[in-house]
Amino acid sequence: MVLKPITKTRLSEAAIEQIKELIISNNMEPGSKLPSERALVNSLCISRTSIREALRMLEIMGLVEVKPGKGIYVKGLTGDLFMPLSSLLSTHRETLHHHFEARLVLEPEAAALAAKRASKTDIKRLKKVMATFQENLDKNNLVAFIRADIQFHRLIANATSNRTIEILMNTITRHDFDGWRMTLRTKGRPLKTVAEHNKIFKAIAEGDEKKARSAMRSHLKGAIRNLQEAGFESAIADG
Image (cartoon, rainbow, N blue to C red):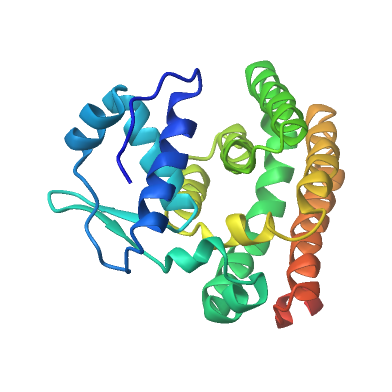
């Protein structure tokens, strides 16, 4: 495959598709090195910012790993694009367990604190990302949907005005993507996510700590149930 200059409006998303196609068409194995960031910029004729955004989303999808000072590498099997979700869940069972265990400890209380402390600016930002959710759901744009999902949870952490909670949430979202990408691959989950986020947002906007805590916990439990239905077994859901 020869990379072609990109002229579409959504440059980073077009770059994602071409890089994925490059990996698939060349049957690249895990550990294979991809063209450098500079080479991608030159081949695709887009900005370094767009390339970096594309690579960040490919990392979220679990397809590549960017090693500072070393290069860009194929991370998991390109079969990640085709592998049944049940197989992926089995492979990442321990990671997913830890992911949701941490989130169930942290996020319900973070939502309650956000309901207590959120400023008008915080509410405005959450409302804006909610609109982005619906827009990307309508367009069936899973990559942008995941990005909005992560942003929603980060904004809630920011609204707590607790720097430690912000750091913890940023760490989870930056380094533990399996929960997000696998949950949103389960049938009907994106639509449920929008509805559940609306409940969380409404509770925070109304300053209702109890409802915010409950809505967040229900949201996470719902994600776990969907994963269980897809083949992931975890004692977390019974806790």
